[in-house]
Image (cartoon, helix red, strand yellow):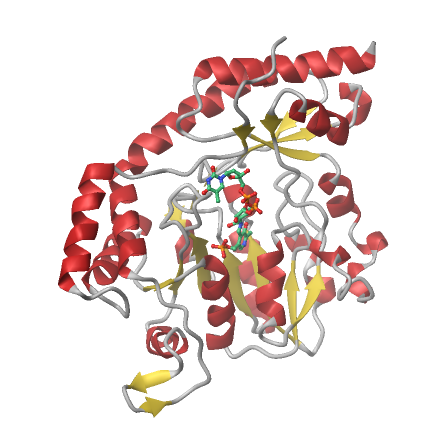
Length: 378
Ligand code: T4K
């Protein structure tokens, strides 16, 4: 089998219609209003509220900033229960708020935080649960909320991957106190860099409005210690343009997902990570799990093997966040406390997945997987 001539990456950004967006960028430049809550910023916020079916939304220059300032707005202290199986930004947002992560193991099936293990982690210092809808598959938001209500904890979701996901028909942004969405170039919907917070209470809107803009409540009044986290007008134009092509992208991703499933579900030892009943995922990633005993080779052998075909799958989210040097000594970070996360982090592989990925390429990727398995097992 031939390798690909050009590298196939794990993703490729969604891009808007170039001529439409160019005209809009020209208008922005001519208007001389380039950032600081301009018209495009306000328009995008409105359109996203409609798309995500939420009442309250604030925009930011990236998802990490959104999460960091969201945690700040919630005025949390002490310990926050979270997952080790996530991108570094999740826990780094805690760091920037002087909050201590308490790592909780994940569910085998969804790879999200396991609600049945949260309660045992709660101490008198716990103020919140920071859960992640990993790979865009919704968490068990009902169970998480029950625990939060019982112990009077805040719930904040890192929904970086979960744009457009639903839980029992309800848009995912309507759960918990806050949800962050990332609009990075690699996300289903992007503003190149960007992010948003959606939240349950309009009261947060004023506070976030200050935090995102140096703590200013008016031109000469600084009320809180803030940051510069504003989304600019060009980012907003890209977002508006991408909203126009999003449905087509989702349809394409549905097709691609099905093509992968048709090819891969026949291979013993590969499990496809899917959303559970009543939980609609976001079509952000296509993720598989390798059972070495059944598949014959390890996830890492497959990962490196694919590279030799010019296919760049990713080992998201390896290593676990609990392995970062500054967390490693925490009790909750001990390997024995996180058995499922340790197992999964060595089994999970994210395959190339984006709307422009042609069926022939998917076939070649799947054939490469079979060939790597065959060559190594013999
Ligand atoms: N929470 C979670 C759970 C997250 O996953 C993330 C971000 C965040 C919070 C923070 O949100 P942001 O502050 O980023 O809004 C990428 C993204 O940079 C990152 O946003 C994302 N998660 C993470 C899962 O993936 P890398 O280090 O994998 O990016 P990189 O540069 O290797 O890109 C992946 C592939 O995409 C490349 O191999 C090629 C392709 N690519 C990438 C870019 C940037 C393109 O084709 N074009 C491009 O412009 O982190």
